Image (cartoon, rainbow, N blue to C red; front, side, top):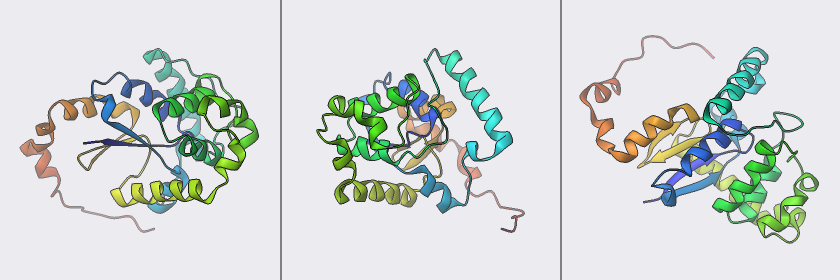
Length: 209
């Protein structure tokens, strides 16, 4: 069965996690699903880490440290957060293929280039196999596909990116990769009695919103 991997190019940790996924023996089963993280965060009533000033400071330091530890080249684009819709739609226009995901992630997070409009991404058109990139990402078909992807992610319970779905169970974050690998190798990991008991753990207090 395919393994949906929900991501947004605005997330540098999705870029880091993508490098790990490519090394998995199950990589052929990975199905990249570009989604609009902003819409997901709005749905769950959350802010992105870069939208909270103090968290943003930590987030960027942690990112650079993690990239260094993992040996992954990383260079920030001119601004962040940025509008990821043109990059997401470009990916969809290119069929959301592995090569398209690679090319766009590298453009933004390896080469440090802007990706917030069609003009900024024009240099990728030939690599993506899209003749007129600006026209392609402006079609109703491409926009609707991104909307459907995002709605499907929300319906599946996705609350952030990157998220890998394994038989409907969601695994979020670059740092959760070892757990993902363990479950891919042995789904029975999730059926440990102690883990199952936690599913029924009562909620003792809830904050008012």
